[in-house]
Structure formats: C-alpha cells, structure tokens
Image (cartoon, rainbow over all chains, first blue to last red; front, top):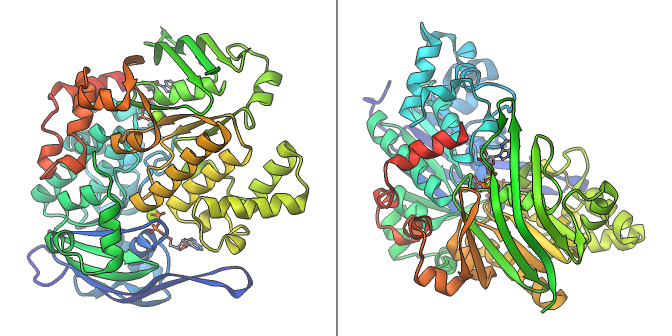
Length: 260
Length: 285
Ligand SMILES: Nc1ncnc2c1ncn2[C@@H]1O[C@H](COP(=O)(O)OP(=O)(O)OP(=O)(O)O)[C@@H](O)[C@H]1O
Ligand SMILES: Nc1ncnc2c1ncn2[C@@H]1O[C@H](COP(=O)(O)OP(=O)(O)OP(=O)(O)O)[C@@H](O)[C@H]1O
Ligand SMILES: [Mg+2]
Ligand SMILES: [Mg+2]
C-alpha cells in the first residue's frame, strides 16, 4: 500500500453535515470539523449519545453526503469525486458498524459474506476465494469450520470477527470503527479489542475509533476528539485529555465514568 | 414481600435435525418481588437472552421450554396465546437486546408509541400523543415535541435504544425485562436511564430483570445479581457480596476484564485461559 507516503492518511477540513427535518427544522449533526489522522494512528472520537459521532464517520466515508467541507485521503479529495470515481477508493476505507446483528445479512453463509466484496473490487479477487476466506478467518481467530455457517448461528463476538475479516479481505488502509465492541460481553470485548490492536500493529492500519466508553478509549487511542452537539470541544493526546481536561464538557464526561 | 415472578427449573432446548442440542437454559430458579431488581450477568452465549425471552413466552420452535414460570400466580409455560397476549406489554414489558433494529422503520416513533398507548391503555389520541412526548423527554430526547414525528433512521443509535426503553415503560409493566438496554449509551446518558428505571421500581413497584455484561451498571441498578454460565445459574447473591468475593472463575474474569481496571489493552485478556476461545467456538457450532 501507500504506507510509505509522508503526511496524514486523512485530512478533514471544515466538514459539516446538516439533516433536514420537518417544517424546515435542521439538525446540524456535524459542524465545522477539521482534523488529521496520521498513518498507523488510532484516533478516538468520544461524546454523548446524539453528539454526531456516527454522522462524522459516515460523512468522512461519504456514506452520507456532507453539506460542506473537504476530506482528503492520502492527498486525493474524496469530496470532489463523483460516485463512480469514488468507488475504487472505497476499499481503502472500511467501516465496522456497532451492531454485528444488523451489519451481516442473516441468510448468507460466512463464505459468501466475506467473499462478496470481491465481486465489486474484482482486482482483489483471489485465485482460490475459499482458501483466502479461511485464511482471513484464521487471522481473526475463527476456525475454518464456520465458513458454512450463517450469522444467526454465531455469537455476537463471532459475528463482529466475521465483519472484521470481511473488511480485511479488501486490504484496507483505514478502518472506521463505530462502537465496534459496545454490543459485546466484556470478555468477548477484550478479545475483539486485542485482535484489532494486534492487526493494527501487524498490518500498519490506521483507525478512526468511535466509542462512548472512555475507559476503553484510554487503552487504545493515541489521540482523542471530544464531540458535543456536533462540535469538537476538545482534541489532544489521550494522556493529556484524560489527565488534564480543559473543556467543561470533557470534565463532566470523565467525572461521570462509573467505578467498580 | 409478595412474589411477583417465580421461576422453577426452567429449561430451554433448541431441537436440531440431529435431535436436541445441548440446553441453552438448564435448570434456572428465580424469584422476584414487586419493586425488586435482579441483575443477570454471564458470558456471551450463557443463556441470558433465551431466559429473558422465555419469561415473555417468546421462545419459538425449534425451542422447547420446560419447567414453570409463574407471573402473579399465572403459569406461563405452555399457556394459551390469549393469556400471553394479556400478560405481555402491561404485565411484562421487554427491551430486546437487538433493540437497535426492533423499531418499525416505516412509522414515526410517535405513531408507534401513540398506537400502543391508545390500544393497550385506552387513551384518547390527544392524550396518547402528549404522553408520548413526555416519555421521550423522560429518556432524555431533547426537542421531544419535534422528534416525536421523526422516523427511527433519523435518530442516532443511542437515541433509538432509548426510544425502545420509552416504548417498554409506556405501558407501565409490573415487570420489566431489559436485555442489555444501555449498550449504545455513554455514561452520562446511561446514568439518566438507570435513574429513570430505578425511579420506576421505587415509585410504581415495577420489578426488573436487568441483563448486562457491565458490572458497574449492575451495581447501579440492582441489589441482587445472578451469574449465568453455560445455561446454569452459577452464582447468586447480593451485589456487594458477589463483587467482594466472587466464587466462580467467570465472575472473577468479568471483574478483571473491565476496561476501567486495566492499564493497557493487553491487560484485558490476561485473565483468560487460551482454551476459552476454543470452547466458545465449539459451543456456537
Ligand atoms: N438520517 C438522519 N436524518 C436526520 N437526522 C439524523 C440522521 N442521522 C442522524 N441524525 C441526527 O443527527 C444527530 C447526530 O446523530 P449521530 O448518529 O451522529 O450521533 P452519535 O454521536 O453517533 O450518537 P450515538 O452515540 O447515540 O450513536 C442526532 O440528532 C440525530 O438524530
Ligand atoms: N433460535 C435459536 N436457535 C438455536 N440456538 C439458539 C437460538 N437462540 C439462542 N440459541 C443458543 O442458545 C445459547 C444461549 O444464547 P443466548 O442468546 O441466551 O446467550 P446470551 O447469554 O444472551 O449471550 P450474549 O451475551 O452474547 O447476548 C447459545 O448457545 C445460542 O447459540
Ligand atoms: Mg452512533
Ligand atoms: Mg443476549
């Protein structure tokens, strides 16, 4: 991949996403967001429910169309491309969704689910798709036997691992993880996090990690963005934000973290 | 205290082509009085959701339920549909684990709430509508007056989860079964929801079975906890006692896997023996 190129992997400038509501009421879900993500970094976005985290992630990937602003991926302005021109870039930027129950089609086998994206990105189609799927499953710690299973037969943690294997099959550069473990049991959560962090190191992936779990963010991210009502109220290294929060809202978020 | 829910020797098996699979729930006993909350903990696949669904009479073929579930004196195992329909909603309410998808995408949130209130609580249209707005406010949806006319996809993940909670408590159930109802919520919003639910148990005597994998959450809502492992209740007692001296290895692992207690992500999986993965994989297969 282009990992040797200098400069940020993602450069986001003035990103704004507005939803139209009833009677002309608008929701400004993301307002003037600017940030860079360096190669191999894990940048976390935290903030309360409804603060705009998922919309930010979707806007960066153009899964929703931003109202204004620019997103550059390794120098290419994704916001300037039409749908067709955008397509080849999609594989470099993959998203893992919060809900492993919803993001995998229940009636397709694991083999089909993991190999499906290769039909669109034909240049990535392996010579032996079956063997490649087994290899990807192994990479996420799943036995080859699950290849014929359907999502309904898998536990939440296993489904999320299938979703990760599917994304890895496209040899992505950036993974956008929208609450990837919040629906999972803590012990499974721990496995999936360990898997993600190991993959990040071995494959040199860059992560945009969305989470409402501050305790978890503290363990995985190098930098943090705190969102509130669509606006970035604080950004900084994880250590700094946790040790010395400057914004009032960040302080209240940290103070509300439950202790055992 | 009078017993509202009494479960004895609950067993649930899913039949497969090769005969019955190993039981998903294997002899669970449970008692709950009005106003009481039980936190149900346990590893993924241990039978928490199947137990919850069984209490609502929602285990469908090929699932087979045995044992006894008495709600307010009425036996629910093998009860006729008529009985179950009467109990569901106003007797026993439920927030489903996959609540993010349990809203109907083609109706506005307000239409779904209003209909339930009109049909089940006999409210007039106008009353049902203003009650719907109140309920959305109660679960912390800002601009509820406007939001009530929005469709589910126009809400964020955590807002949808809260709408499901509003729907379940709208009918003032005497028992609420909440299956991981706050997984999509940050701590501040979650704390508000937990306060709301606790308030309902204190003010209206609602009883609650609260399924969670988060010990910190269990501690905030419940006084009693039951830990499930492989379909059985392996530990039960007051939260304080179980946390201070967990007897089952899974409970100990749950405590150590909590990110709030780790210093590095590697710490999260330290307490785990390698064969755990293998076992889990085997079980799902
Ligand atoms: N498709 C849509 N149409 C209209 N409004 C939307 C749409 N998607 C999101 N919104 C609104 O945008 C705001 C931000 O939502 P978003 O999903 O980005 O929040 P979030 O930070 O991810 O919250 P959560 O933690 O609850 O998932 C919310 O007010 C939401 O209602
Ligand atoms: N419809 C079904 N058909 C066959 N097996 C099922 C079905 N539903 C659940 N099971 C099995 O029953 C067992 C218990 O599942 P359950 O969903 O209750 O676990 P859980 O404790 O809620 O786990 P989680 O924390 O992941 O939600 C699992 O082994 C599961 O595979
Ligand atoms: Mg979200
Ligand atoms: Mg469950």
